Each structure stands twice: as structure tokens, then as C-alpha cells.
Amino acid sequence: MGVIVCATRGGEGSRAAQLTAIQFARAEDHQLVFLYVVDKHIIGEPDETLKGAVHAEFHWLGRVMLQIACQRAERAGLIAEMAIRDGSVRDEIERFLREKEATRLLLGAPRHTSPVFGDDAIEQFAQTIEADTGVRVQVVRPEDYAALLEEIRY
Image 1 (tube, rainbow, N blue to C red):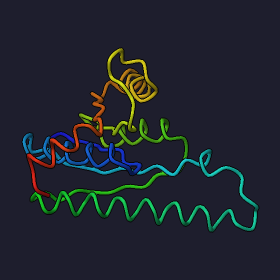
Image 2 (cartoon, one colour):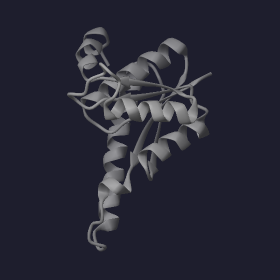
Image 3 (spheres, one colour):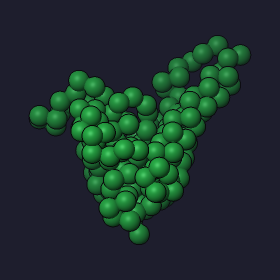
Image 4 (cartoon, rainbow, N blue to C red):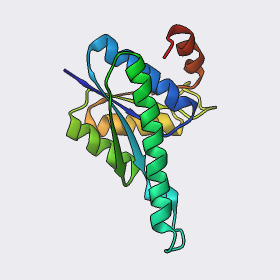
């Protein structure tokens, strides 16, 4: 049985990626895991007295987003895992893909990005992960979200 990993960060692209991951997991009878990475570079350097609280808030946000994704999977008849990691987004995704022996990674694209030449940041990110890990990476665009909602109801 293969393992599909869906990296989640929130937003329309992530929701579209989650729905696509659910479809693949159902069709291919694969395990589904939703992953959220708390990147300390994004958090920045808050006042030392706030550092723990900011980190805890990012973990809480990640848990909420992952629980929503798992509920979507459950409504589709799947049981999905959820995982939160700390560190560099790329490094943690790659490490997680290797640990899980994943067969596919889905990433949601931010709004207003273009797949035309495959040279926007998310496409480059996907190509790097695929080259580093050998895992097939698919970028799902938010424009696909409306079509997915029409197609499936969870």
C-alpha cells in the first residue's frame, strides 16, 4: 500500500490539494497523511518572552487545519493521519516523505500563480523535492477547487 502525503498550509490551494489527495487515496487504496510544518523562519525572532507562546499558537493553528483535513477525509470514508513537524519546510517535508516511504506528495499552490512555464516558486519547490526524494510531487491550483467541489461533496 502506498502513502500519499498532503502538505497543508491553509488557504484555497491547500483545500484543493486536500480534496485531490482524498480522491487519490480512495481511488488507489493508499494511506493518507496530512502534514503541517511550523517553520521557525516564518515565525521570525519574537521577543524572547513571547517565543514559546508564538510557537504554541502555530502548533495550535496547524492542529486545527489538520483536524479539518482529517474530517474531510473521514466524510469521504477514509481515516487519515496527521503530523506536525518543526523546522525548514523543505527539509521537514523531505524527511517526512522518506520516513513514511511516501509514493506521492500533493502541494497547494498559492492564488495567482501560473503553471504555464513551471517556473513559479511553488513549481520550483515541487521540482526540488521530487529531485531530492524521488517522490512524485503534484501541485494543485486553487482554480481546481471549484471544479472539485462540484465533483465531490465532502
